[in-house]
Amino acid sequence: MKTTVGWQADRGETTLRRVSFERRELRADDVAVRVDYCGVCHSDLHALHTHPADRDTPLIPGHEFTGVVTDIGPDVTRFAVGDAVAVGNIVDSCGKCAMCLRGQENFCHEFPTLTYGGTDRHDGTTTLGGYSREYVVRDRFTYPLPTGLDPAAAAPLLCAGITVWEPLRALGAGPGTRVAVAGLGGLGHLAVKLAVALGADTTVISRSADKADDARRFGANLITSTDERQMSAARDRFDVVIDTIAVPHDISPYVKLVALDGTLSQVGYLGPVTVQTLDLLTGRKKLSSAGSGGRSETAAMLEFCAEHNVTADIELVPSARVNEALDRLARNDVRYRFVLDMADLS
Ligand SMILES: NC(=O)c1ccc[n+]([C@@H]2O[C@H](COP(=O)([O-])OP(=O)(O)OC[C@H]3O[C@@H](n4cnc5c(N)ncnc54)[C@H](OP(=O)(O)O)[C@@H]3O)[C@@H](O)[C@H]2O)c1
Ligand SMILES: [Zn+2]
Ligand SMILES: [Zn+2]
Image (tube, rainbow, N blue to C red; front, side, top):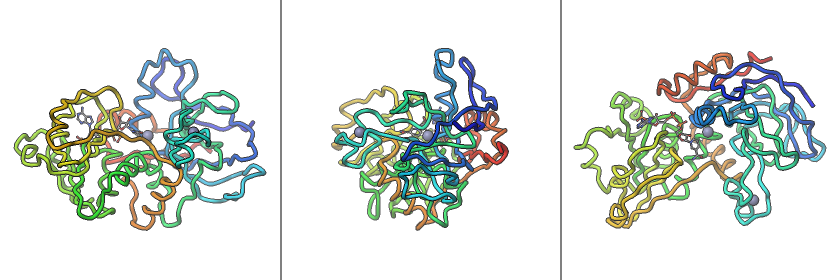
């Protein structure tokens, strides 16, 4: 076991404190990663605030990070000590089910092992996340960080980026298609940048008209979701609508924006939604969802981002300011992703 340091919420707590804890000995196909930069995802807030009193193991969040390989197990051939790498929100899967065999480890029938709050497939322990100085991960779920990508601004690609990349790709976003992105936050701004880089005509749907300048800078227009006139003018306009809104909300205004045979992919709020069948019927519209990505699409996304110069707009803060970052994220006060600099944990 190797002792490392991280930011942990104890049972019943929603704030994080600095703790020492152990990482497992390397298995044959493990790599040890020094975590340099870890993004702060809205899912981390959900994890901290969902029934903290019922949590029976400590919580160390963090599932989009970049760093450097510090050690490798004897069977590892894809990585060497010193390599720049990235890790996302999945660290293992069964490798044998139909989904894994199709390269969709994110949909593994045995449920993929999550980077934190998951159950390790070998020893049954609860995984502890990337708000820490060191992580131990199976080599298959470690990705080379392409040169040219800034390691801090690339960290959010590993959750926010891949979560919107897979539906954009699967739904054919590209030249000649119109894409709308609802909610301009961590996921939303990367969806916009990726859709623009894929060649789609891209529009942001936001409550905040004051994000219009940012939308333009990313290559998109902005529709204010609270402006009925703008919303009805955009009826049936978009082949793909990616809804990244972090809270329960009425999706019918967004279904109305979907074009004939188009799709609304709901990736933000993952609870129950109510949909009027007639809203889908009128235009043969489809309702879908997505989350995370398979190994090959994750690697492809990183290459695409390096080629097209896509990274997150970040506010980089020392990891000791993690609680402040989470508070500000909860208030929607970040443009557009906090990334923790883990150097202060050494
Ligand atoms: N499917 C997956 O696998 C997956 C992966 C990662 C995250 N998520 C989930 O995706 C959601 C977004 O994550 P994120 O990190 O992008 O969060 P974020 O940075 O906080 O962005 C969420 C955006 O939602 C909009 N929003 C927030 N509160 C709202 C409200 N009360 N009404 C309407 N719009 C509201 C805001 O956009 P405007 O200000 O522009 O309106 C905000 O920027 C979270 O629920 C997260 O848990 C899912
Ligand atoms: Zn996430
Ligand atoms: Zn599987």
